[in-house]
Image (cartoon, rainbow, N blue to C red; front, side, top):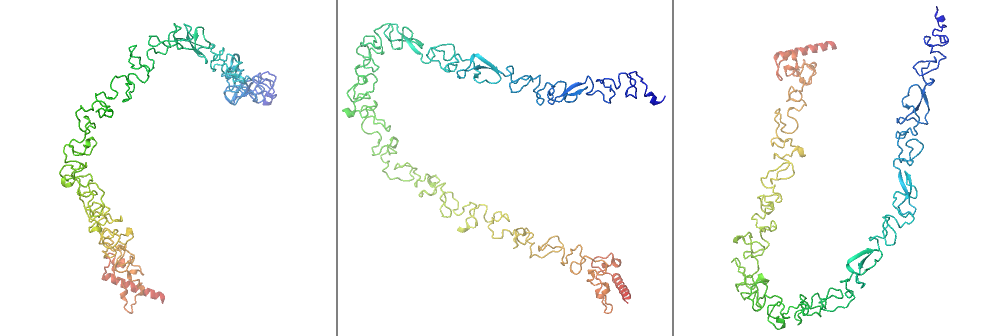
Length: 628
């Protein structure tokens, strides 16, 4: 049966043949009339497998933020399989923020986090309870609240206001005595309220309170008064308003005093056993400052008012014999203690024991030896006897007073008659005076052992210890350290300065090398500094390439080519046979290798000469033939 006939047979009995468009004639469920489903087969033979036309194709939504929820506003895609970047739900209200989707937790951030259409509801995480603050004192009424993410107008976070109609009443207010709970602590006018007073018990009703029994309150309690000065709250006749009866053992006026009428702090000694010798004068009591010599015993001591130091001698100024009435150890009965600054026996002398008219300097006087009348500031000094005869205080071996003793008496002063000369003094150089006693030459300022040339010495620079005759001298540093007048840049002293410092000496360490020296040829040394040691004849060819380095006309080419300068620049064709011009023949046999190939320079042989002659004649004849 032909293929066209087969195409018209309905093999699977689904009512469609291959000619009718049945794409699978072996499966009755596949034909142009079938319904496309998601099974991986082209059920309706339209050339498309599954896809959006499948009856069970799913709706897919773009999930740009990959949070598992599709964009509610995105285009719906129908497909049997989930496209990349898509999900099967469209509940995401912000597909650009992965933190916003139906599964997110609503927080206080002005965003609808869970996509329920409500932004920052009361249930949002972070929402706070706010309390109405009607009196705007910063504290709210706990009975009037609102839950919100953001503080509503007229509301505050604090709920402790106990009277939201009075701005002066709140937890921060100060409690005062006014019958109100000002600070909302539940207590009205406590003891701590501003205005509360301390009240004192008045048991004897004399209007004076007991300081030992008190109560703090805004309002005066019964049986209490504001005063606290009653010293006996059980006796109405004893209080600060009562009159005092002196020396009866009772302090009627509560001033703490019954036996000290003059209020000087001391009881009268005549009645109550006290110590006050005059209880009517507050300036007289034991220990009071005693104005001596006024005839009043102000301190109640009972002694003479003219014997302040109580040594039994009245003051000399008031008819007594005590020269110091404030010191009991000074009076005519005392033994004199010399030089202590005190005239113990009141004889008028404490510091001139030797009686020479000068007090001892240890007691503020000027006598340095108060046991020897021959030593005092009025005596003439005898130097170097070991005695300070005039009490000048200086060393007896320092006559010029420069602080150093004479060298001839064991000191270090080399001139004890001149105060400007001593060990360590500033030394003015070149004045001939050894001011510092150093013992060195006054003409050797740099202490290099050589006197200055300016003062008859040999030192050409007396300010530099490194410069003196014979000192090591570094050449080329511009300093003549050895004081030799030679050129600093002529190290070898040959009269030529170094070429490295602008001179013409090519070796300034060798006096036999300079422009005036005689050149020793070919020794590897340029004695005359002309830059040439191997080209004696100066023809520009060194000896190792010059056939004859004593003749500038003979250079480096000594071969057999005609025209070589080795034959005095005369070609062999120039030989004048008529005149016997053999004088133009080469001098050496090595000019022609064939005749004397093995000869040394300057060497000639008869064979070589003959060869040269014959060659020359032959060449001459050939040239004549060619010319003729």
